[in-house]
Image (cartoon, rainbow, N blue to C red):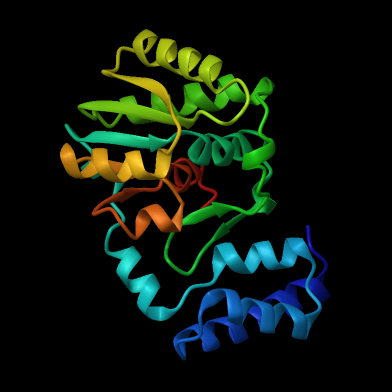
Length: 221
């Protein structure tokens, strides 16, 4: 857990960054100004990148967020690594790395995507996701994993098996451009997208925050 002094520093930095974003500064420029002012390291910058957004951006994203109780008979396209990593964090009870962000999305600030490796938590997290969705009766679920990540094919096959074992319609695949494919499929099939990736959220109509709803079920949020 961050120290009290670090928490106060990050709070002040977040305030300054939001102010600049609301004034129309580009995020990269504003982030550099704030990070340099407060002498933030990589972790501090990463925290601000994921948490802080302008009021306008936050409002635009917030209206896209779907209640878990409204996914009945809906098709859900899941940003595989994005959701899986956050749910593994929940399963490991590493709640300190989860933050509720300005745009209403729960994010993991560890930033391990490019270095991701399966672990003993992977199967637990996948089962948790699939069983959790099953309770809310979606029409089908589709996991998309980035093919450039090591052993993504094995993970997709394992996920596909779990989907079928649990009696859900759907599949799991790998793709070279998951962001593009999530947007395209959600438009073609009027589906929901499960992700915390802001770039994707900005391009789709409806977003499902699976880690948030799992945390809420566990009474963490």
